[in-house]
Image 1 (cartoon, helix red, strand yellow):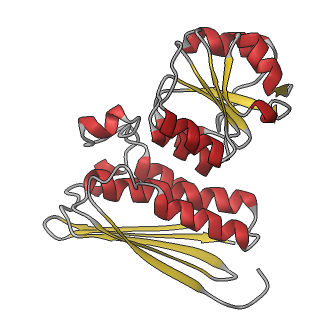
Image 2 (cartoon, helix red, strand yellow):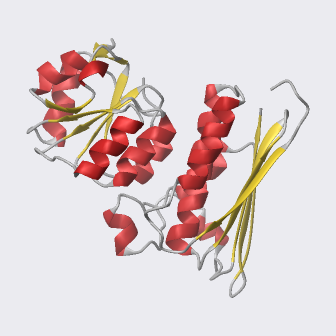
Image 3 (cartoon, helix red, strand yellow):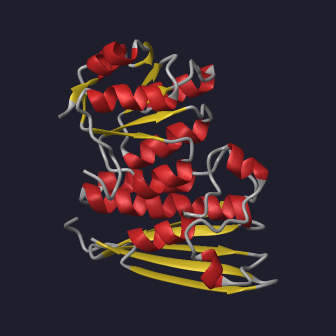
Length: 120
Length: 142
């Protein structure tokens, strides 16, 4: 079941860092990982990425994979350069205080499936 | 893709230049989008290109990345100047990695790169000589 980004925001009690105007977007699946290598190897398109990594390669990886939104977990907020990069590429960024495990669990409970290659 | 043309571009990729890593693959993806190539094919090319580009940055002494697009296929070639891969079989194993701490901090170096390139490609060739360099050829059919 797809979720709107605005619903993801509510469920995770998250702050919008970038993309107030993108909250109507649907996400069809999600992937939680701090390993961009694995994200590159497993993620499907139009997915939501949850991660604790806040370097520019997260945005770049998301861009190349057509990931439409990223949730930073454990209360992390990336630097201004990264926020601007996401703005430019029209990728929504959220930040939640939840841990990666809890954030993924809440979204899974809300009906969002995994976004990996071998799993529906 | 209607016109029977081939577009070719080549770029130098600097060893250890993490800031620019992904620029060439970004250019490839943009070009494929502009040409109206199918989004799944575009995605496979972007992933394979990014992995290959990251390999140049993380593992090589620097090299060149080029790509060409014809109505039939996308061809990505990377050629570096060393150090070369002693055991290609091992390098192709998921989970095996010799990446630096720096690469790992950025979320890479999980030993998924080469297997992931192979998975995205319709044809994949790897040639490597220790002390000379490594050449990858990736073909993705449109």
